[in-house]
Amino acid sequence: MIRFPKHVCTLRADVKMMYRKLLIRTSQHSLKRVLWTNNVNCPPKMSHGTVSALYLAVRTLLQLSKYSERRLPLSAPVLSEKFYMDDILYGVSTLAEAKELKCDLVAILQSIGRNVAL
Image (cartoon, rainbow, N blue to C red; front, top):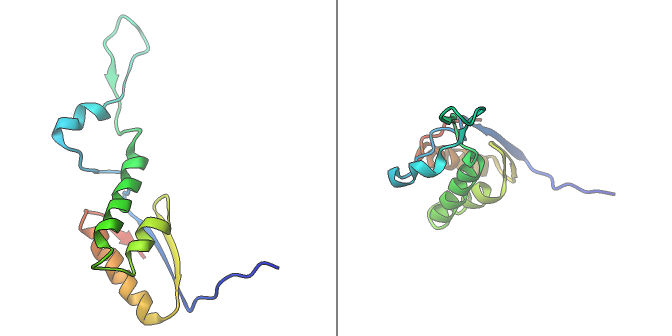
């Protein structure tokens, strides 16, 4: 028999535009270009977006978690362990804990220009 932990409150969130607008140092802009050509005689074209967007977004969350460990100990593990793609699903024991976590996560993610739909 599988047993699941029981939570009084659950928090579900979606981070809007998680993989867009990642700030990259100007000196590293050339590293994110994706070039292709269909014809060897034509110059290559540059695509929009980056292949590394998923990695950069997840790496940003891990770094935010590390920066937040002392200041926001409730939120830091959620940032590093409870994300799947751009979604959070997490349970807590009390309503007060859920409210605190919500405020902390919104503040942390807004600090890097991300909006959260709760």
